[in-house]
Image (cartoon, rainbow, N blue to C red; front, side):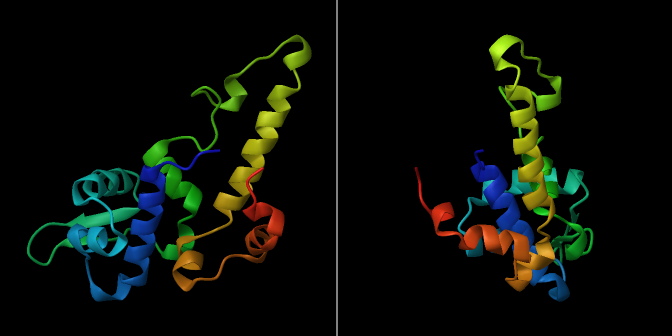
Length: 152
């Protein structure tokens, strides 16, 4: 699985909004500067997040962006889907749309299992978890395994 720059930036931007939630709308320029993201690129990402109902925006001098929902109701999976579409695809298609025959038949349940595991992790972590710096125990345990940090 590959996490795009767009998805990485989107998650970082939403977490930045979450930690600043109490202070009113946050300017995109401020998020871009703090997170070292191109302002123009971030504006496009924030537009996708707004259309997905994850962030809200207000124009004007006191305008900016804020979370449209509570941080504990927004998952990392929600953010990735908003900016990149389906979380796991094979050749740009959802695994359930694929069909294999012969010796390749076991690939379909393999891709489905992969999707299920990725979803379990990404749907199990909320923006509130990230903002608090506290990953859920199952995710933390996966990351604590030394083999997870090695590139085979």
